[in-house]
Image 1 (cartoon, rainbow, N blue to C red):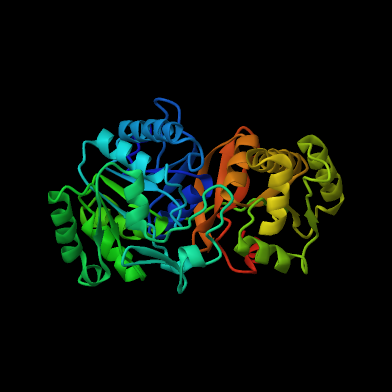
Image 2: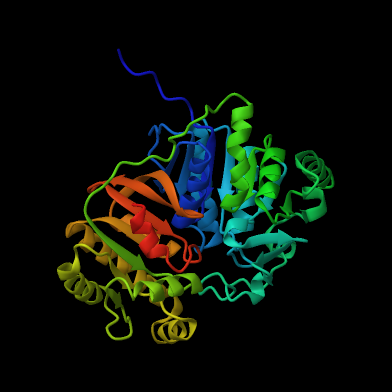
Length: 427
């Protein structure tokens, strides 16, 4: 007797980078949804047995028109797969520019769904991101004063999200303030209805704790589209359970064990990743790549692999192109901003392929752009989401054209100083 057909997925997510996609997939898996992340838009007619499907794009830093086109294609596939609700996932630091891509993509998805309103909430309190009075805070500091505002590709010099999103969209942006949020889901729902009736197509929603995110998620149960960071997705699984659509599952994040060597590739220049590399130096062999010494990805990659291969064994090896802001500025000045980033991505992608060919089967990748380049180089097409190493960063089972791998794709800003050794303790 043949197996019964898989039920249609409940939630479809369009994510603007690879680590962000893994972040929200982990949030959903931790709350009992079987989550699968695809690398790019799946093929027409492809079927995926999951409660939530997250389509990972590399659209955060490309031209707005290209980001819109890619996001609309992802939405179309997810609608065809039968998803009941949709989520546009972007960074918890609202990484964007005045030209986009958050606003243009959100407007396009809203139009395709024939919907009139969507909330926007990047808050992720577990990683010290909160929104109050429409302003984004990192810990106790406004985003633009936090040390995280100088992203090399998407600098965020304005913490007022109502103003930022308003510059990117064609309709006024509203605000659901903190005191309303603290009154619970009913008050949030009523406030969003009033804003929609006033002609607001989007509203920033304040949130400072997980209880706020759960209430926001409950209030958005009937929304066609939700936009935000992964935090606001935490309330969505329970909505589906209340509707009788999602069974209780204790093993949604279970993954098989994978034997093999271990490695870390770091391309992020965030403060968190730099601290993690500093901690790793006392535990693991660490190699720093210097693109100014030889700006040729083939030569840089081969030198790194020559260094790494004899060291593969009991301990992970760490290969990093991460650098503090002043060194990043020197590289960008010498090579050009776009070419500097592309060179690092191409180099680390070559190194990843070489490490896997040498027997690495557990790989941590730090940085969204780096993660995108690595999974593409490895031919990975699908990730099954496992248990979290740290908030927003799970181990995943990667499947594609090569051997099965355990991959952890880490947003540069996520994780504590001991993240790298903690990752391999839980692999």
